[in-house]
Length: 264
Image 1 (cartoon, helix red, strand yellow):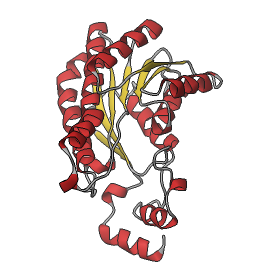
Image 2 (cartoon, rainbow, N blue to C red):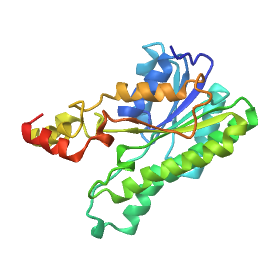
Image 3 (cartoon, rainbow, N blue to C red):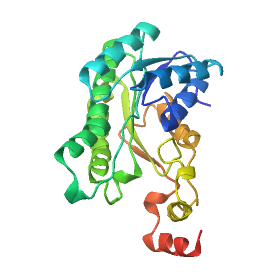
Image 4 (cartoon, rainbow, N blue to C red):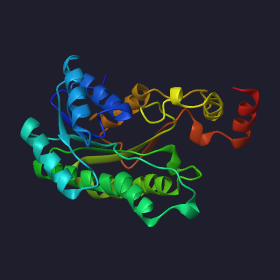
């Protein structure tokens, strides 16, 4: 069992969905957790809900694409908890548009939210961890889109693929400081933005058929993989990519087509 007693974790975009699932998993393992989110009221309510479950948490308003916000959120977290041992860069987002209609602003917005935000949070976290001298863990939440071509999501896929390169570079550079850096790539995961209840029956059938396990993941299932990567016992596990996608990334396309046709 993972024991994070005495540890402090930051989870960006941790007020709802997968982020909140990761917060709950880390907290249940004994960590104190700081939720960094742009939605202050939602984050504060999440902190209250976690407290009722015995999990100590705090929140800080933060747009991860803002260097000033990230620095301020780190200061608030250190003031509240005194240290940061685990930094989970979960915040991000996407919007769909045909590639030829994608504006430069849309492209830059996606990279800012999904990749630049991770860079800023990791840099701030690493600076603190190096100064403290006790090591730590950096975890980027990517996507199966990092290795799959997905139409109308070119900026998102590019940003998520870039996280792999960032993680590998940091794993090598920060290893002497005992700072591990990994990336977790989830597949279809239920959350407030893409919950199956909001999809048409046909869309749900097709997407579920594309996953060998035949369904979407619950946030708690992906959070369990994040908890695994945050475990201090994995001191030699760094620079790696872990998929929590129900084997979606390795499923042969002909099998997905067959399953869809059969209504699996």
